[in-house]
Length: 253
Image 1 (cartoon, rainbow, N blue to C red):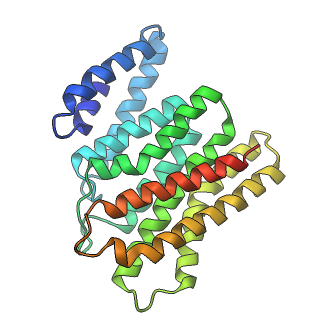
Image 2 (cartoon, rainbow, N blue to C red; image 1 turned 180 degrees about the vertical axis):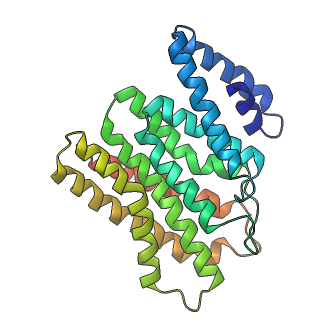
């Protein structure tokens, strides 16, 4: 089933690369696992795929992008544990609720856009597996907060730019930050982390979310000009999310 997901997210012939590499990775990870552990991983895969496909009729993601969401969710769950699944799950549900497929002037998102959204998170997952530092979940969460804030701000600014205000932008920044960080703060706090440290991290994260979202807002009219490439806004979000998360990681103890 996981190989099927690798094939589903491949495009432009990259299945010839993804399937061998994915198969080698899975064999190296699971060759020595017990039957119980493999059963748990199979169940998690099925649940995530079914969950993603249930939203097929409402989400503006195409089938390949939905399978990509399921594959990333599986990786986040297996590599980081369930706390690392909460933030991307919140982003996905908010994405489905705010940008349903039935909404007017809604374009269909494909796997490259999903990859651009999660690639920074994949980096922090790998860093966590290498360092086993639980605080790296916060730069990970910030990358998704920046994506959510910039998506919402750009949509509102382009649809109703005359009535868009700094107050509205601030509300969207708080919303994105809250969706990404409240669950993580609660989880780490209950795990015994210092609440003073957590509040300091949350404050820096809020500032970085605001700075990156504000910078993106100043570029909206330029990024969405007809003579610009269609992928430019997506790559700009990726760059800002990466810069913001690296900035937060630099202040972690």
